[in-house]
Length: 140
Image (cartoon, rainbow, N blue to C red; front, side):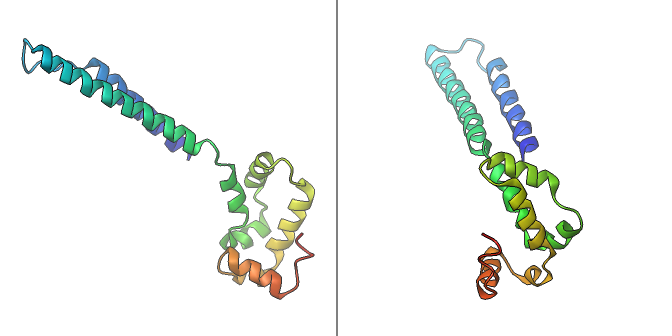
């Protein structure tokens, strides 16, 4: 995600830079009105580029929750049982600093090891399995 955002930001900055370099020479002696219209279009285009870059930075600034979501991707539980997702775990703990790291790790390892939980189809189904099997106290 970050790589994509940086690439798009460079592309927008390149477009912005190109806007400053282009002079429309269709009419060698443009009228004052024509210059004003061109200048207004250029200013609008530059403002649009600035807004796009600003909005992209704002919207993608906080992506730490995505790593946490990966930890609960049921389709990956079997893989996670064999190889714990260290990078996503570290990113999650960094994002949510109040989380007890050792407790979360232990609970995730138990979650990943439970073959019966791998049959759940989504987070709601996983929650229903917890409730149905009285596992609320196990994962508190």
